[in-house]
Structure formats: structure tokens, C-alpha cells
Image: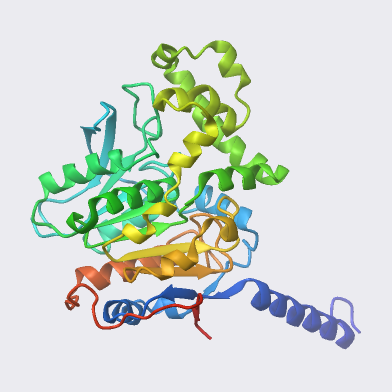
Length: 404
């Protein structure tokens, strides 16, 4: 062979490598979407209107690890310039909640749909996984968007000695009441991520049939927090990536507001002892909310009890390889499948609040696009199904509907 020209044997070898890599990628990285639901008329209509529920999730070839998915979703997506209107509301316990809103009074009216977004435990209106979806919903879809900033994160500040209130739906209620008061004639749908979805489902469950939302979406819901904590700490890698990230965010917020938290008898010595999230919860969080122990606090954080109480259409999006939420230990599939208001979409891969796909995964993720389709189902000429009657089924065993 001439210099610089590959021999036929080398071409065969490269072709073989390409076939092997393609096979491995398709076998382990491409996932059919498993759907768990009761086939009511409304659920069948939703699935028909959401093509991504019947497709496959093609993990980005550069992000085959769930850890890479999470890191990229947080740090590597397109930066967006967000021109928010900022306001604040007071939660029932006196905490100030900062709200950021995308709205345009010249192009939108009182009937323009409102999408409320509740981020994860360290999330806020500038988090990349929030800005991507919010930017698209406002600029491309024309919806109003209201984002709750978790206390102590991003642009928010702390007015009483506590941060995220995940034990109930109190903060969600404050933001929702604000939205209803400001836009009383607008249809509303809420989206919750991780801890934000845990808080959202608690609020919806307690509201019951009175809930103002037409539907909700829950992304990477943790359901059972003790199991999540144990899962993270069983792996050194997960501890380094996630636990240290959370602790760093928590300690920064605590240091910024230390004088306020000193009312709870939190000392500099306590601050120095905080190495893991469990330490933070032991020395700070349980004092903020009056719990006697960390396990007691984690038990109150759980939201799996809400499943049978969800009275409005709810889409859960979960990944089996979620590095924060151990799927088999936390996700109550059997109970969820027995509620006719719920559709659960499960993929093999996707990480935690990530689902980045394509060769250049910096824009909208697969889950973002799915959520847009789901929103359209309810906000664009949705037929009435009179309480979802007409398609109930009794499950004697858990059944998955998987796209071939």
C-alpha cells in the first residue's frame, strides 16, 4: 500500500470496530420507553398526542454514563439570556419565596397558559436545566412561565432560618396562590424536578379535586429520601459527584446567612463538622423544622404516599439508571399503575433530570421535548373525558407497555 493509504485489512478492521461500537450503543444506550398506565380514554389520547412516548430515547453517544448525563445537563448546555420579572411571596411559615417570571403583556392576554416550574433542591431560575425549557416555553410556545427559586439558591435570600421546605407543599401553595391571583382566568400546568416534584405532588395530593392545575409533570421524583441518601453514600463516585455538590451549595448558603441560623444554636464547630448532606441535615435542617432525628426528617420528606391521592392527570418521567434515585428501591410502579390519572414513562438511561440526546446535546433534551408535547395535549383543544371514565382496568400484576 502507498504511504498514507489504508490497506484493505485496516479498512476491514475499522469496519469491524464500527459495527461493534454501533451494536453496543444500540444494545445498551438506546431505550424504548416503558409506559405504565391504565388505558382510559384520556390516557390513550395523551399517548396518541405525545409521539415521544411511543418512540425510543437515543442517549447522546458522548454521554453514555448517567454521571456524564447529569454533569452535562447542569454545566454544558446553551447559555440563555433570561429577562425575568422578579417578585416575591411569603410562605405560610413566614419564609420569603423569590419568583422569576417570563411574561409579555403586549403579546399575551389573561387567557395565556401559565406554566409553573419548581426546581430541585439546589435549583433556581438560572439553572441550565431550567433555563432551556423556560426559554423555549416562553419564546417558542408563547406561554407565561413562573419559576420558584428554592430559598437560599441563586437569586433568592433567606428571611427565616430554613432553606428548602420539602416536608410539605407549603412553598408550592404560596407560588400557586400568587399565580392564580395574578392570572385568575389562565389555564395552568405545573412541572416539578427532583425535590421540586416531591413538593409538587404533596401539594396536589392535599388539594385533591380542588387542585387548580389542569395537569402536572414530575421529573426524576425521589419518592423515598432515606433510600436515595443510602444509595448515594454506598458509592464513592456518587458521594464525590452528588453529595459533595449538595454540601458545597448548602454550606455556601449557610455561611452567607450564618447570623440568621445562629438562632437555632448552630455553632462554628457544627459548621466545620458538615462533610456530607446527612451532616448538614443533622446540624441544620432538623433544627430548622423541629425534627428529633435525620431518619424522622427523611421519612417526612417521602412523597410515595401521594400516589393514590393524585386526582389530576400526572406524567412521571423516570430513568432506571438515575444515579440519585435508585429505581427499584424508590419508584412505586405498582401503586402508580393503579391510579387512572397517572402515566409513568420509564427509560433505561437518562440520568437525573437530564435525558440529553443527539450528537450535539446542548439544547432541549428528550424530556424537555416530551414535556412540551404533554403540555400541548392539555392546552390546545383537548377533548373532555368526564373524569377519565370509559377505560378502567384491574391489574393482577404490573404490566408495562413498551414500544417495540
